[in-house]
Image (cartoon, rainbow, N blue to C red; front, side, top):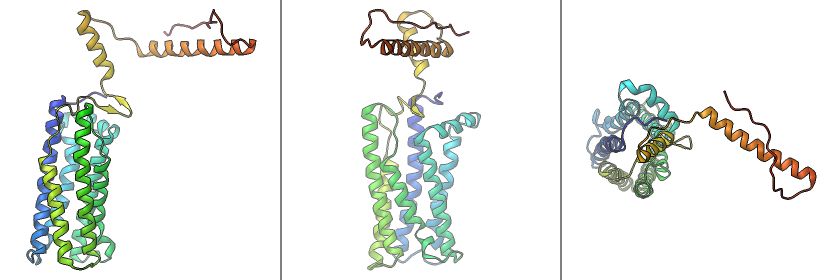
Length: 276
């Protein structure tokens, strides 16, 4: 898979998304704190933080597809389909959209079942779980550091989810849980907004289990060391050579097994036709 940006550009674009999402979730937390303090309970204030959750989802989903530019939309689509990290981001966007819409509908009286009021804490818990296993790209040290930060973030989000769920189901004291989940979300928002991709992030990326750009990078290395231009080996010829080698090994094994011989000084090679 061809990379759409340099590692430095990828780090900046990732940081930008973290800053914006962290800012929006921080606004959600502050609005929830105001509500816990007895403010924003009258319409339309009571719809403020659910609307901001919806905004967070509405921002993240298009950003995943458009931040590489409209001219790259086809490549971006393939990137999202092949990269587990982007799939996790897309799942988070969907969870935010569903949770924001459900909370708004529940507050407006369109959805009265308790389950709809639990959509937001459920989404928070699911997003927190995704951060616990969030895939990272790059050098080993960068990946280790990024995974550690994201795991802290996941734990804080899950704590916020549990506190909000306790408030929704009516556990006492209600105000304690109201303040608790809002403060936990604010801490998560600060972690997200202050996050910076470490040096070495996106230096090495994999798609569908294969390193991105491995072949072209290897060719550039050889060319740079030798000072000569080397023609790229045909993938068909490479597959043909591998198949021929496999056939040779299988033929030798069958021949030796049929004769009861455990070793042979001269391998028996089948005829291999060179690929066209």
